[in-house]
Image (cartoon, rainbow over all chains, first blue to last red; front, side, top):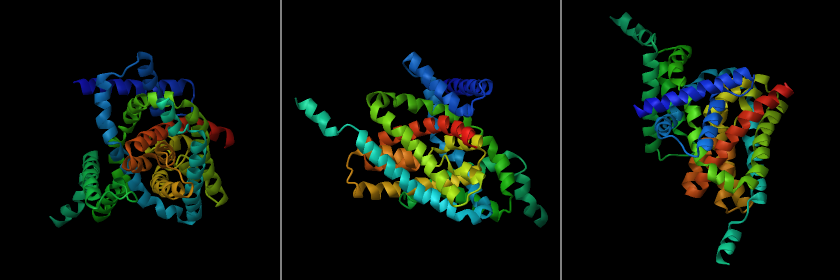
Length: 123
Length: 239
């Protein structure tokens, strides 16, 4: 019963997200808006609700299954995009190389050293 | 008898039940095969499951569109499942509070550049607007990437292909570049895996260490939230 109640709360936040993006004409999706609303709700309350957590666990566990039908489509539409293979290689191989390089450099630059924290502790 | 046997698959797929059962079956079978072959990072379990569905559809000569319409009943759960991602996001909040400064300086530029690099390179290589819209959210975790690409007018199958390749490529490039740049901080490595390689990178991060895994989940979640807010707005301004 708790799981169903938790599921209902998820649906209500999804619908609230839909109301918000429709009324404000936001370009984000109802699901993302609902996710942000529920996170905000937990932050305001200072804790999570047990029933929502119970309903969320199985849903998150089967996320891969929910997106799998989309992956099936790749094999049926691939032929249609064969003439754009260079764009895919450029964006996916070169683009990912560049973004990984950027992230590593930025992150190394701005993350406080772990050793500094250790030194502080020893003082 | 033989006639009715030949038309049986298409009869079964008249209701969504067969498509849903096939999806569940392929999901479990794909996971099993994935365990057998030693959980390789270059071939996610979801790809094996998808191949099982493809082979079944081809063998039974059932149209992809027919399968897709049936499976849509299951995919409908993606909405509440996306809302459910707020729970792990809330649980990560203490990491975000503790490291808000490096996160603020790295995450927005990294997430913006991940999208800009891919769109720009695809555009230079002569991609159509539909393909660019499908590749723009390529570093975002699938449930949220799907909703972003719908906003931009991309194709979900193209996006899914791009997501899988991006996850595998991000894992590969992180392992190469970490050696070249001599980076040993598992917080940095984990964060880079999550920002660029979404769930596939996060699986790799958890193999490295729990710290890398936690930072990868954090990077993945924040990239998804940030990109979901910034990309559709930026897209509206540019196109």
